[in-house]
Amino acid sequence: MLEQILEFDQQVFLLLNSWHSGVADFLMYWLSNKPVWIPLYVFLIFLVIKAYRRKAIVVLLMVVLLITISDQVSVHLFKNVFLRLRPCHEPSLQGMVRAIDGCGGKYGFISSHASNSFALAVFMVLAIGRRYHPYILLMLVWAAGVCYSRIYLGAHYPGDVLVGAMVGSIEAAFVYFLMKYVLGQINKRQTCTGRL
Image 1: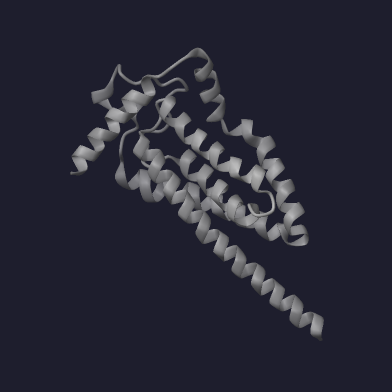
Image 2: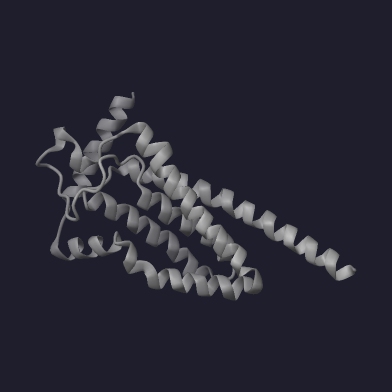
């Protein structure tokens, strides 16, 4: 059964990786390039500060915690455990994979790009989505685009990004509830201090 799933994953990868154009090559390269998104991160910091005011530091620390967890889990609990070769390193796919941006590390399950981008997107939807839903829902589109770019660039199988997105989303929910707990404790202390 697992063998059939992995074979299907390879076939879907080869299909998606084969659809190329010059414009798409350019867009997917930049979509997958983390430094390009610094203006987005700055904008998100602005929205968090606007929404949480003095408590924004707690939210931003939770984002740092979330990305650290997401990145470390994707490497140490998945890549270094499952040891699934990236498509561009897979000997049976030699000559069939179009790797536009090099190949990256040896192992690809799960995609750290997918895990990190969905962790951030889902956390932001939960944390500030009600106030800024027109902007924040676009975060999910951004995260999905990052995931697709990893397949397009030949770095990951669809299963790598799908499981990475799910893991990142679960981590986001966990850290969001941790943030709500911490903010609740801060509110209780401020209420108690205010009464004295």
